[in-house]
Length: 404
Image (cartoon, rainbow, N blue to C red; front, side, top):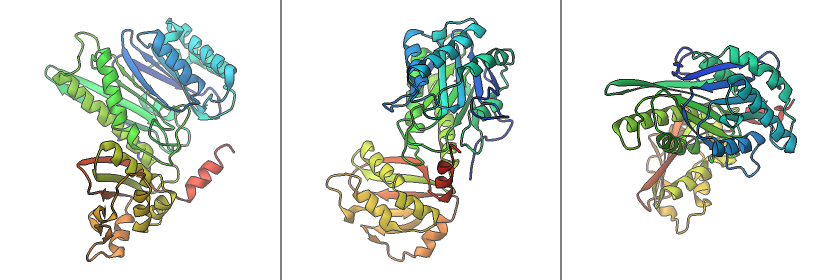
């Protein structure tokens, strides 16, 4: 069921962005595990970072650098080692990594944003990064997006990337994004990294607002297992020069919509590639009193191991879904107001089995590799949609064997 790239040749270059990946031997042998992304001088950037209280060293330094320098010039990403739970040596390793990039690109170390993903609690072999960065600098190319998508993978089974073009009066722009993530996926960012760039001349304020909206509409709407990581990040860069596109203009709206679409593609690809997942499930909650209330119910359902294992078995055990709704913490919830559908199969009406409901019909739908579960709470006009997956045998195997 894994879905990554729309096509091997579908990742379009973005003017002002050059990339290079290489094998630094950080954890893996015989594969790229270090990525350097260079941004043209003057590019506007923004980043969304994990809300985990035990943020990894690269997240802490990225926040620090973002606050000190107005514009980012480079992103350095390693896979295989999260550099989390590593204390002051981990922070020093990040600073050395950024200094190595700064020396190669002749920029300030604070203009380098660091990112890491992989195993927590192991020292980052920074000397391997320092030795590899000069090599990457000499191999930077605008056509390096596919190689980059592969270099940031950990338990991912496929690289994840997508491009879109934006047509506005008098101009055409490109948006390209790559991401990684397959497990430890939950809103407030997830165990995921995503890097998106456009050659549209978006202003700094526009970049920041678009990223916030794109993250809320994509990476904050997915869950695989309910866990969030110490390293999650999504960065957006706009490299275009000339008259800047400001918030509220027609061009701004076109760019915003394209960037949201790219982020949603990456987010859904992470769920489809969920560790051990065999089914992509859309959970839609309607009839809530607020969007927050709807999301609360949706995630309670999506985080239930009982619900997720029933999905894996194509078992329309609606009692598990109903029980999850009931324990979601909503006050004044009435079972007689609740309706439930699986795709177009009406399962419950008013909290009771629908007239003519046949379990075999629902089971047939659930055998598909993608389906929608719709719950109507019957108490308001708000709704929410999230994307998740089932939970099967391979999830346990992958995570039991992750460090071996």
